[in-house]
Amino acid sequence: MKKLNRLGWAEGIAVSAFGVHTGIRVSTAGVLPRVLPLLPPGWKKSRRTTVQRLYSLVVPGTSQRAGLRRMNILYEDNVRIARDTDLDQVLAALETDLHRYTAEAAPSMTFLHAGVVGWQGRAILIPGRSLSGKTTLVREMLRLGATFYSDEFAVVDDFGMVHPFSRPLGIREDSTFAQTKYSAETFGAASGEKPLPLGTVVLCKYKAGARWNPASLSPGLGALELMGNSIAVRTEPQHTLRRIQELVKGVVFLKGARGEACESAASILNIATTDIGRETE
Amino acid sequence: MKEQQNPKARVDCLSREFGDETLVYDKQRNVGHCLNSTAAAAWKLCDGNRSTSEVAGILTQQLSAPVDESLVRLAVEELAKARLLVEPEAPRRRTSRRDVIRTLGIAGAIALPLVTSLVAPTPARAASCLKNGQPCGSNAQCCSGKCGTGGHCGA
Image (tube, rainbow over all chains, first blue to last red; front, side, top):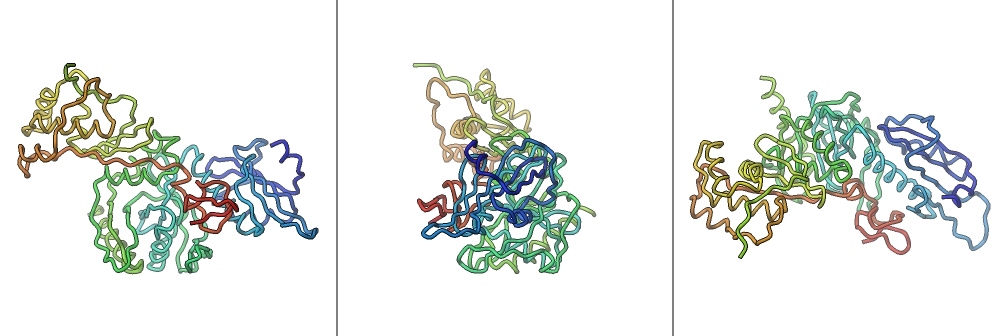
């Protein structure tokens, strides 16, 4: 870390998001504005002099030297976590790591890896790993009138309420895994701001040609699936289980293979509407 | 030959109830288990002092339905497989699920004990990962689980 500290840093910022304090410094002036949109939603400048994690981004200056590959290098504390000639790629690695660390270290919230939309005053949760089709399903629900909460994390508080983690949706438009960012407004949807109680959990995987015909899952098995998508269950098992217990009270769990997202999205919203109606009767 | 020990539930696990099911988290192995109603009821009664027949007697009262000892033995077997019981010094007698079904009949009043287990993910596994071609510093960062020598995620 001492070596890194000696490099000389042009700009830096300490931020706080979900109670986690992180710092980011860059070696070249003018790069920090590109970092700010990547910070976790709801971030604020922190006045703390110490942070829990410090990211250092070394960006080569403008001077050219023949035969030298101009590498952008990202460090998490003193560990190098990304290195590339393309700054955008390194910034993507910064965003992924920063969000994951925030999710892991947040003291009063449990983060579940899931897409979330709001529907008739309740949240619909779509847990799943990367490339499981969460964002596609979220996008289709937004087109059908749902409110955007997240395509990355469901943030759950002590009372089992789901908070937004809204950042632009990262949509893969070809097989290269590269993502294009779209705001929820692009799909005619609003972004939710207030925490919502959970209504429905959808556990699904895309299978070409499959017809969405889900089975319902018991609360215990559903909770186990949520545990399997929680970021900090290994470090904070007690808090995680307690918050999941609060979260799933009266919740409907649906599990099955889904075909095209547009068909399953409509069906999920229909089921959610029916369940909300049944509850209010 | 050592005497068969009474089953004893581990006390170092976290547990939470979800209706009549119980979610148990094994902090040592980082594994979550969902115990269905029968397995959960048996697990709670395994204190190391009660024999399987005594547990069956108590369950019969609790559930207001006859509970055969073979059902409790099967529950103990399931719980032991999930490592939710203190390891006995002598190996337990094995009970097959098929034998229990044969004894009780398919349409028994009590559900067969069932333990469903899931390994808890590391933060890196649970959160979004880097796609192929993106720069990385360790295997854990990549969706493919492989950070190549050039410092990029690969297949």
